[in-house]
Length: 509
Ligand code: PNW
Image (cartoon, rainbow, N blue to C red; front, top):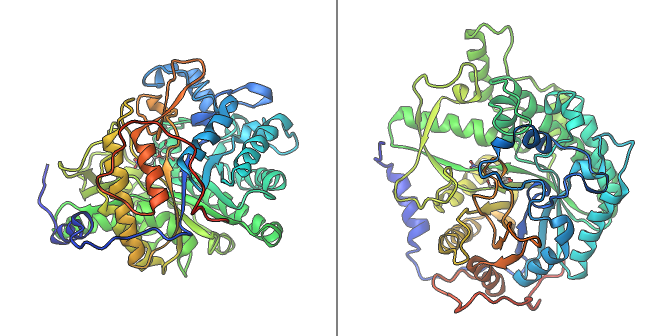
């Protein structure tokens, strides 16, 4: 692998990881700290109390061998029965909010809104009320990968009618919970469309490279906008909440300064960042022109009569533009980029982007093969967003690190500290960050990886009937950061005992 580096990359590494000055940077009092999970990954109880089947239920039940470690994904961390303990953990950490998602099929078993499952509604009422009892704000994600199977039977995210189905679902959720929920995330990571409807390597496993993913992306963005507009029109005045979308926004740099690598990196950014940001936050709206041109040209050369990237009508562009109160940033890692040789399936998203990714060998490696620690990437991502989209409000809706099961998770602590320091630099340089969300509150079903890659601040003993949760070192360090509002480089507790955090200094929202 080529590892010759760009001069600017060196500079930014020095600025962000060198921390050459001795200035102590603090998180202001009103900066929010939280932790996250998602329904499928923690709840279990996949068919309890009238819950309908989701695409992940179907996907794993029909192909059990796809769960890498053969773990019990149907039970997961059993948060359906353990939500009180989950809230207790949040109180131990002293966080301001909990980001969790609603399982569409728990509330609407068939996906359609004519049939509401009140027991499912009750579960989320219980969770929300338990959080609020302790002054922890709920941040609710409407959709985190678990589509009702019934809707998948009609094409799922590739069917444009899903925009309406999602709006109807959002209305039910807002009617039931908007009186108590002030932070909303419509959809999590439309970039997952590539694996879900292009490569078919996650649920629903539709292999339709180069076509399916773009239909999914368009419809998911429009579904987001429909939910945003609904809230704006019918709930915002009364409840004054904010609504955003969570995007997977990782950083990338050219592997070296050769023009071809710089160009490839620009293209990669447009396909992985601007594809989602541009329709919502740019003045012009629409998909980025480079993305439109590349896909249109390739489609023509491949014999298609029209571009594989569907167009956005002027009405759709209008609906999307400005349809968010904040950018939810899910940031995990950084990649180095060079152009690819002809090596991908034609047509496919990867062939359209046309790059090959690598990384620096000295970037710490997580348990997940795709995940390496390069904190400067978060800093540079924030600056990129500020430059291109004029200093929008951002919420770090996810950032995290995977390890083995161990409780003394020193690598997670190092990763957490590094990224929070980078975030403090980004804030100092003008980024408007509302809050930071650690992924994840607890170990959970890491999709196809089962429970073999642990992301939790709390370990979950999946072999125990109770799914016992135990604080890791990172939980204590995170708690301390939240209390002190600074990132110390060397604090280590002598043991892993953790108590309910006292709420002094906690902001009233
Ligand atoms: C997120 N990447 O997915 C999801 O929102 C979570 O459900 C998931 O558990 C978590 O991150 C950890 O994987 C991502 O390749 C998957 O950079 C892959 C990437 C980023 C986010």
